[in-house]
Image (cartoon, rainbow, N blue to C red; front, side):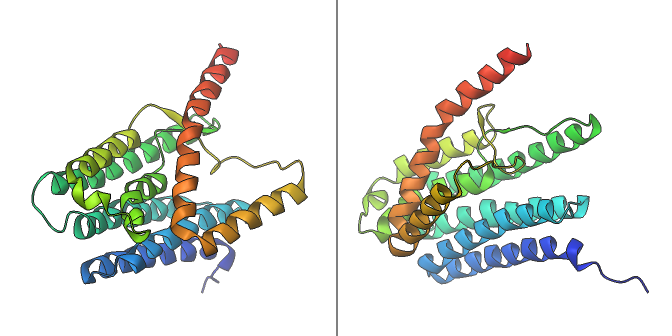
Length: 244
């Protein structure tokens, strides 16, 4: 009987844990507990980061892990956020809000399928997958569409009074998922930190902010990410000009 290699198994366990949090988010959304629903999506996001980092650290990346990761991402960052926004902001209305949530789920599926195709092509050509994503990653898209809901947790109920605007915003984020806009990728590239002390201070400041001011911190980090997009486009163009 072949022994189980726990080094190969551990990243997949974390991926499946993230899947469980995604499923729990859908359950809490259907029960009307929107705070717990969004927290489950955030924890699923942490699992999504950890499984890839651990797989690369243990040198245990596999085709099974890649497929599990995509399926988990589709449920946790495609289906779950779409259902959560439908149940919370749009209150199950059958107008443009329903259409926007469906568009987000469909485009999340398309984005993950395109990502898998590009990943397989990079393996076939034995080239580096690159330092850039094409379009915004699905977990980031999930966080971005949930921002109007986080505002309600902070006491700002503008989203309920501007359903058409929220729907248009969700459709815009959906388009960014499958766009050709290059965005920075840290998922398949090692981070080289010049000063460990500065990194630790920066890390603990973010951790403390998230613990004490969760919704405000999420909005600030999301804004910071959006502000990096012009820089990623400039960096991508510079890198292409050098190679050409």
